[in-house]
Image 1 (cartoon, rainbow, N blue to C red):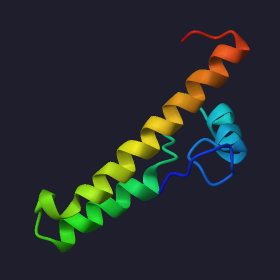
Image 2: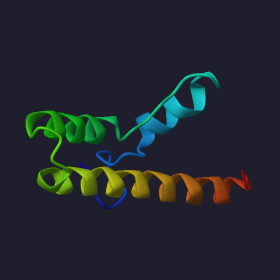
Image 3: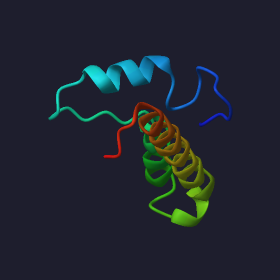
Length: 82
């Protein structure tokens, strides 16, 4: 689950940034993978009933939103626009 602030527990922390910047272009890295896996497990556990897993879906969306926003701000600071 995503945390707020600049702590090391969020999806875009120092460790994740380093992994992301050193990975090959063909490699996939999702710092919110844990939240995604929880969503899938919830769906499997509940027979695909999405209504029972809304909290897990929201946690994933929040994580992704935080990750993308932090990444965007860092790229802006570095002068990169894409």
